[in-house]
Length: 447
View 1: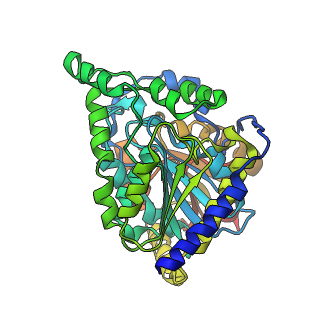
View 2 (view 1 turned 90 degrees about the vertical axis):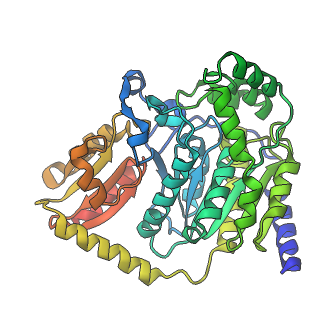
C-alpha cells in the first residue's frame, strides 16, 4: 500500500505540475447572475438594514451557495469551507468549473463570517457550531444526490475545519480535500499586536486582514476583491485570534483520528503566509493510508478565487481535483438504499403537505446575502410559468415556520422545495444557484 501510495502521489504530482504551470494570465470579469459571483454581489439595501434584533445563535441554517450544471451528468458532490476572513463566494470560480465537470458544489459561510456578520453575535467565532452545520448538511446533500460520493473540501482555516469534521464524522463523507490547513505562519508582527490588544482591549476589533492579505498575495486583483467585498472580514479581536490559533493547533490531534477515508492535501510553493512544513507535518500525522500530498505553484489560496490567477490555472485546478475525486470515489455506494430513503422522506412530506397546486417553497431570510437574488428569480418564473406555479417565501426567522423547516429538513438557506399538486416533493435545490436550476426544478414539478 505504501508503494502504491507513493506511485499515486508521484502521478498526481507530475499531473498537477503539467496542468498548472504556465498559461497566459487572463482575468475574466465577475459574473453578475445568481449562479454566484464574488462577495460584492450582496445588495446595498440588505447590507444597510439593521438585523441586530436577530441572534445568530438561534439560527441553524447557514447561508449557502451552490453550483450545479444539470446539463452534465453528475458524478460527485463536494461541500466547501472557506478561509479566514472570506465567505462562500470565494469558491465561485471553482464551483463554476467543477459543476461543468459534473460535480455538484456547495459552499457555506463559516460562523463569524459572510452573512452571519449582519446578525447579533454574528461576528463571534463559533467553530463548534460550524462543525454542527457541516454535520447536519452532509446527510441532506447525500440524500439530495442519491448514489453519488460526497467529499468535504476546505482551504486555510477551512482546511482545518474540514480536517476536524472528518475526524469527528468520517461516516458522513467519502473523501477529504484539505488545502493549507496548518496554523504555522511566517512571522508578521501579529503576535505583538495581539499582545498589545490583550492589554488595552482584548475584545476590541482591530484590522488584521491587511496584514494577512499582504502576506497571502501579491496579486493586485485578488487584493482588491479580498479587501473590498462587504462579506469578507478584515477585523478580529485579540481574544478571537487566540481562539482561532487554538483551533488551528488542534490539527495534529484531529489528523490522528482520520483513518478510514482518502485525503488529498494541498500546499502552495509560493505561500508566504503558512509554512509548507506545517502542512507536511499534519499530512504525516494522518492515520489513513490513502493520502496524497501535492505542492502546487500557487500563493496561499490554492483553490479560492482561482480565476483571478488565470483562466488556465482555474480550469486545470478543477480538472486535477475532479480527477482525484473520481480516482478515490468508493465503488460500493448504496444508491438504492439512499434513493429509497429519499423517496420515504418525500412520501412523508406528501402526507403532511396541504398544497393544492404546484408550488415552490423558498426558505430564506432577509439578512442572508445568498438570498438576495430570490425575488428576481421569482419574478422571472412568474413571467414564464404564470399561474401554473405558486412561489411561497418562508422566513426561517419566523417561529411560526419551524414546523415547515423541520418537515422539509432545511439545513441551509436559501433552499427551494419543489412540490407537485398532490404535495409530493419533486426535488430540492439547496443554496443560491442559477435561474436555470430554479426553473428546471419548476419544470420537473410540472411533469
